[in-house]
Image (cartoon, rainbow, N blue to C red):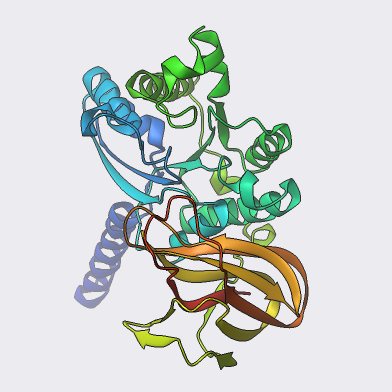
Length: 357
C-alpha cells in the first residue's frame, strides 16, 4: 500500500472515531423528570405561583410553611435538596400571578405549583377565571415544558364553578390537581380548628397541605409517572400578551408624579387612559392610607377598587375582562368611601400604568 494512501485511510478512520466520540459526549441526554430527580437524591428546583395560601400566610413560623414541610419530608426519605422560587402575593388572582410570572426571572424549573381561586371568585366570574387560569398554565408550559404541574384547589374555596374550572384546565394540561377541601373534611376537624381566620390554614392546616403534596408525589414515584407537559403540541399553546401602558389621556391637577406613580387624595379626582384590548388591569401602590377608586369604561361604571393594604406594596390588580377588542377609555375616580380598614384620614390613590393586551 502506498504511503500516501495509508496515511489517508488512517486519517479518515481517526476523523470518524473522533466524530463519533464527540457525538456521543455531546448528544442530548434524556431529560430526568422531577420524580427521577427526587429518588436519585438530586436538587429539585420548584416554583410556586400563587396567593397568600401559596406563600403559607398564617403559618406561625418559617418552618411551619407547607412547602418547607414538604421539603423536609422528602429530603428525609430520599436525600437530595430543594430550591424554591416564589411568584406569590397575598390577595392575588390568577391575572396578577400571570402578570408577575411574565415579569419574573425564574428558570430551570422541575416542578410548578399553581395556587389560586379563593381571591379570584371575589373579582370575576368563572368564565373570566377560566380565561386567565388557562393563560397562566399556557405560560407555564411555554416557559418550563419539562416541568411537572400541580394545581391546588384551596381548602377555603366553596365556589363549585371555580373548582370545576381548576379541575378541567388541570386535565387539559396534564396537571395533577390536589383538592385540599378533601383532606380538610377527612380530618373531621372544624374550619375553626384548621384555620386562623376561616380562610388561611393554621400550622396543622398547612401540615395537611404538605402531607397531601408529599403523598401525591410519592404515589407518582411508586407508579413511575411520566411528566407529560412536554407532549403538549407547542402550536396549540399561546402566550397571552399583557402590555403595560403608561400614556395618560387626561388627569386632574391634584395628581402629582413621584417615583413613577401619580398620586392624589382629592375626592372626585380623575385620571384617564385610552387603550385597545379585551381586558384591563392597573398597577397601583396599596398602603394603609390607600383609598378606593370607582372605575368607568367608556363612561359606564364597572367596579370599585380598594387600594388599602396593611403595608406599602406595589400591586397589579385585575379590573375587568370580556370587553370588545376595540378602543376604550377608562376613568379612575377617587371615591368618597374608604375601606373599613383604613383608619387614617387619607384616601390616597397611586397609579403608575394600566395593563392591557
